[in-house]
Length: 252
Image 1 (cartoon, rainbow, N blue to C red):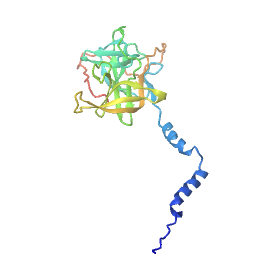
Image 2 (image 1 turned 90 degrees about the horizontal axis):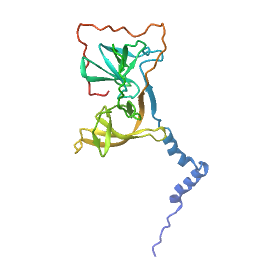
Image 3 (image 1 turned 90 degrees about the vertical axis):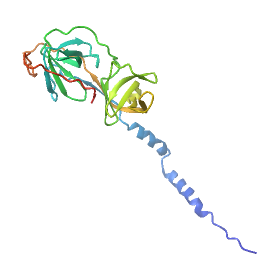
Image 4 (image 1 turned 120 degrees about the vertical axis):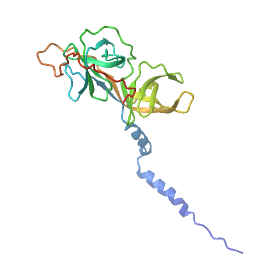
């Protein structure tokens, strides 16, 4: 009769023994804590308030005046921030400079187009600011940064909708954001869409993405009268070449 060799069962059981030994020397909560720690390490959304004008009514350090425009007129109620003003100039009635802030000089305003850039347009405003309020969704920020590079600027006048939601922000890198925003536990998220998609709406959903930074505009300050001279250059209206300003559809 042919003999049958016995196969030892010791070798297959070694991994089980090793696992039991590892479990005996490892804290019971180690396996559950690691995923939670990774989630808790994700950065919370930074909320920043922006104004190029300091509490004394002077231009803050780090801001640069890149254009001077004369004969401007302004109204209260910024469309972009709800807290500052919006202005126009005869150079181009189609262009609204928004938001703008008054300075220590009652006839000088500074306007900032994008909250993440410190480039300023300086306006000479000969007439008092009118009191017509602007339309603004107060809960929405002036701008956002999504992930590492995508920057978005509020579009308060858009009537475009996708899946029943209004377009809220135009962004760089061919992105747009449709509302609403999610703001749970300090970690904001935005529903991002790719523009120019081959779909019926022209948009393709990229899902909910984390918002790293949101910018709000600060309210104008009312500095007390002071003999300290303004740090802003004086702008005197001139009959020479008419200043011009070019509108840009690019929000970044």
